[in-house]
Length: 217
Image (cartoon, rainbow, N blue to C red; front, top):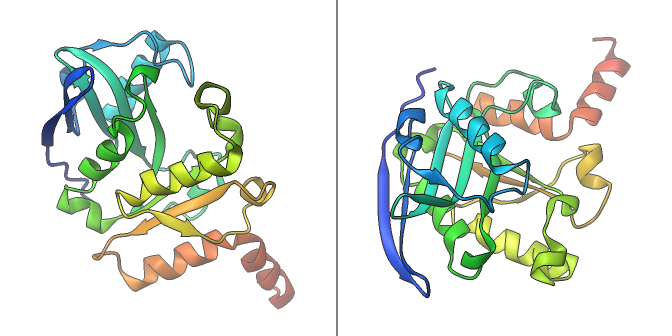
């Protein structure tokens, strides 16, 4: 499967001045910018930037950023699910995961995250993918935002909806371990029926495996 990537961008005004949303960017293009030192949700900023540079080199990897002048203040990543995750079970080439999204605290309320996701879907090639995002409450910045779990969940749903991702049922043990966790899904209009059927098996993998076991498969 070819993983075509078409660059898009737009800018808008915030209370802190103009901001540019753009991507996907190559690793060389990312290196032209400074990575804000407060982007530490997953690991120290310099380590996270190294991770983004690596993802940008993957055939399917997509990095979109929010920046002010030459400073990256937010980003979103897309890539195939980690080989250790259940979502890689069938090695689906047309399944891609929104792996991480982050912005610095100063830009909360400036629609940065929703605009990053919206821009992601401006590339027509995203219609060839099933896009997923796994949302776990223990990754949410409840302390920093002062939101309850359920208010944060509403914010996440609204943000993902900007790109057409909606909650979908699953029997994934981590997701069903807490009612606030959820699987968000967007199925592109060019995804073939066989991929959708395979993804449905993946969403309910325990049920699928149990049925196979009973049938001796």
